[in-house]
Image (cartoon, rainbow, N blue to C red; front, top):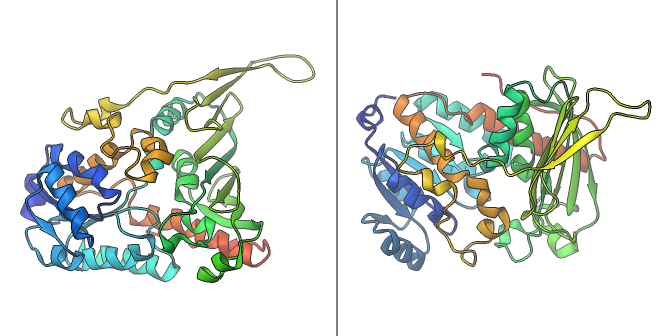
Length: 382
């Protein structure tokens, strides 16, 4: 990574896709290592509105214009899920650092292409997975590192969401092909990756939804085996036909502590503490409602306020409303991406990690289509 901007820290970052991506514009603007933020969107009215709102001077009508501008060092893609692979490849091939929202891609072939391209151009690729920078995740990570959980026995993840009314490319989308919000927290905590999966689809989509991707399932549930671990991980993802409020959830259970995200977004998570001894019919377990601490202390002062301060109003984008602001994760993601570029290092969610997390969902859907048969998951060796 020999760009002068990368050495000096005076980065120019392009934010591409503003319907939700606008959330990140003021965070990049405030980051001490970012000299300028430019924006791009196909919707001219949205481009003008966001540009005026945040005082962005340089605005581009398409990704191609961004990639042609040699002054831009890094691109953060918040574009439709069906475009992630092609857009990430284009950014990397243009010699720019790439951050991309989830998932990394929709096929194994594209996962391999992104990894190969990133290696060839020697630029940063980071998947912007919010779930591993939330207040809840950071709290559990800290307790786990201190050994408070004891031996881990089981882990679970879920992402339950009604996608009716979302853009048309979501219609009938295979649920676990959009897995990373649900599986990434437990994989990051356990420090491993999935190698094999059994998965079953549940329910039946209406025909008009099934036709888009040839996917019959509104819900999929999978059990994963992990590399070098005797812990099993269960993951459920729903997108249609299930009367249940939104949640992005993970649970981790050890022989001393257990943690569960709450049933509803506005509730507090739960901590379970196992007593050292008890009766012959089981030990008592203490249950506590938690208020995980905000971790603005991990960030530069200039962007620390964004762990609590959202940018978009609740009626402007459903991801903010349903996602609870993504748990204060946005400035942590921005900081990790920017610092990995400035320091010339691999980000926490690099191309190999992103591919492993994404491939888990591709394999799970494949297993569901095959009636729950075991499917081996590529590990994308570094």
